[in-house]
Amino acid sequence: MTEEVEGCSTPTKKKKGLLQQVQTKETSSSMDSSSAKFQKKYTELHLLGEGGFGSVFAGYRQKDKLPVAIKHIPKENVFLKHKDENGRKMALEVAIMLKLRNLTTSSSGQLALVSLLDWYELEEELVLVMERPMPSEDLFVYLDEHEGCLNEEEAKIILKQLVEATIQLQDANIFHRDIKVENVLIKSSSEGPQAYLIDFGLSCFDRGRKFALLRGTRDHVPPEFYRLKKYTAGPTTVWQLGVLLFEILHNKMFKTISFLTNKLKINKRLSKNCQDLMTKCLKEQPKERPTLEELLSHPW
Image (tube, rainbow, N blue to C red; front, side):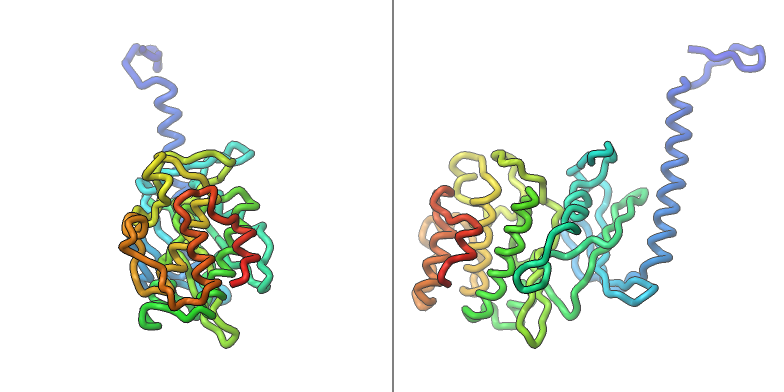
């Protein structure tokens, strides 16, 4: 195709190509602006943790020194997308955390889910700024400081808060998919531990369907995935809570295969009610596991 320019017939790019160039420049300018806004509003400090998803840094909001956690996710790792009711495309993790803002607090008066304060889409990465309860550390580190396991009373407090949080997620049609000790933040206080469920990078909106694509920690996969290559939100969440409870009370890493082949067993020294709850959460058949509401009303 040719385009007439000042009386000369010369080969040029299509108008669509020119439009794409303009849009690219506008997008780049917008991302530069987002980067400047982020740097003006927040100060980034030391590294808190990193993994396959990206990295998380400690920081604070400049106007009031509010502690925050700043998560950097390379664009190539943002593989789940969402389109909101206005047709705006965004990372699914952002969409989910925006919805979490509207959830109510639990019976303890605390929301056991961290809040998203800001998010910035930059040229090569997505930056999420979240509240950072202080003083706090993830449950994996917390366990290490308590010789690898907790007593039943403390485990009960943490599990109850997490069950309440997952009920809130369930009511909002959100499926976390990767509940584990590394994804639970513990804030220490004189009133006891306060648990927060974190990292919604693998989460999705649940509409009652069966999932065939494995997301989450392979060692914690529910048995039905091995048999049927499918799993559903409710029973999987209960299974993962059972796995977490097992790990914080046994000082052992849980593996589904090891548990199903009796290489891992529930400690008989635990109270009968604790053993009963854990056994029910870790039932091989998903239909035999209790619902989250039934967990909350369990005698333990």
